[in-house]
Length: 111
Image 1 (cartoon, rainbow, N blue to C red):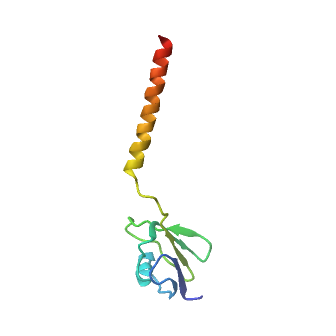
Image 2 (image 1 turned 90 degrees about the vertical axis):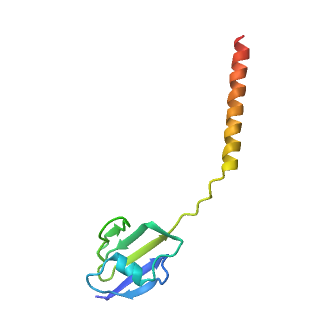
Image 3 (image 1 turned 180 degrees about the vertical axis):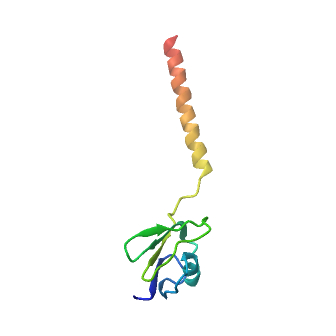
């Protein structure tokens, strides 16, 4: 047994850490210095030595067990553009203008 746990990704101190029996995922995340601001808390996985994996749910009362030789992967948040109200209103105005023009053309053609 390797007596090691590997922690990859967006934690403050990623790398190899000593395996401690009966400890769970939250303990190892704290051991690694916690999560970075870029960490995606909804996308943390534990890969077990037998090939299985389990996703971490931050709202669960008990975090997943970590076994000797496990790998913990913490993903990065997906970069999203902030919501731009000006662009939204501009696009919405263009849609309404086109709709009004179409209704007017249909009304005039029906006369």
